[in-house]
Amino acid sequence: MLGVMVRPRVLLAALALAAAGCGGDGGASSPPPPESVVWAVGDAAVAGDADVPLARLITRSRFDRLLYLGDVYETGTPKEFRENYDPLYGAVASKTSPVVGNHEATLRSTGYEPYWRRKLGRAQPPWYVVRQGSWELIGLDSEADHGPRSEQVRWLRDHLERAPRTTCRIAFVHRPRYSAGTHHGDQPDMAPLWDAMAGNAVAFLSGHEHDLQRLDPIDGMVQFVSGAGGRELYPVDETDDRLAFGDGERFGALRLELRPGSLDYEFVADDGDVLDRGELRCERGQTP
Image 1 (cartoon, one colour):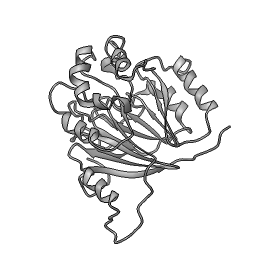
Image 2: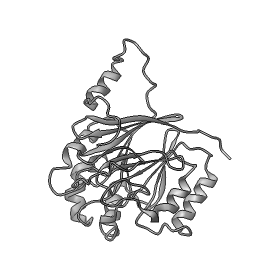
Image 3: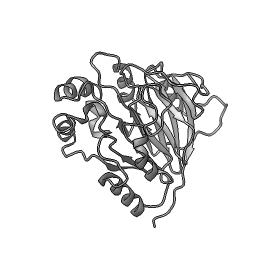
Image 4: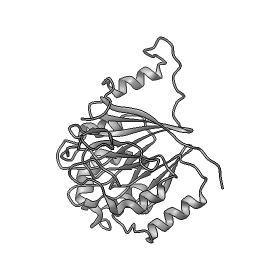
């Protein structure tokens, strides 16, 4: 495990303490409440109970948006969505923004798409934008064509050209562009999506690698990997000099508090321990 470790604590207890206005510094003012609380997790929805404690931690907390970063095992059949995914996160479907993973991509028309159409009452587009307060969250599809001239990349570049000029954005997609994981590692084919977001966002969230990672900024963006949702864990290459934090030994998820001009991030283990914590600032910009 690499990175500066913070003092472990139980997440829900700390949230209750903050709500009560109690601090450990004898009266320092608390930060303003966030506009939105967002969880991001992928690679859960497995047969068995390994993913249950983390799902309970997330769904029983107060939050505004869950980004499910893909993979319903083994192949995303209707039965696996019904028996593996739905008991975990189905109750919070109205607050969930999913992206397709490589495991369910082949059967997306019979598993992924019908499930989300039924849950959301509408078709789930392969790429889309979600507004959370002053932040923009952009869901992308690593399993559809994402070459430089693809429909997806043209849509993304057109949206960014027309939208307000700001870096207060988060991209989320199943496969990472960069990874210090030992199982998959970097994904060079993701470069067109990464390159389009560079200069237009501060964070790029992914799953696929079954661990927790925060890399040092690259092109002005931080690559987060939050793929420790419940599937067997993968080791992290602690010798990778891009790695600011990594944990391949514990299930967990990424929790974000979004505020105007900044976000606070935490990697939280399934028992509530905070493994890594920090802040990113963004430029709010103006409408072109």
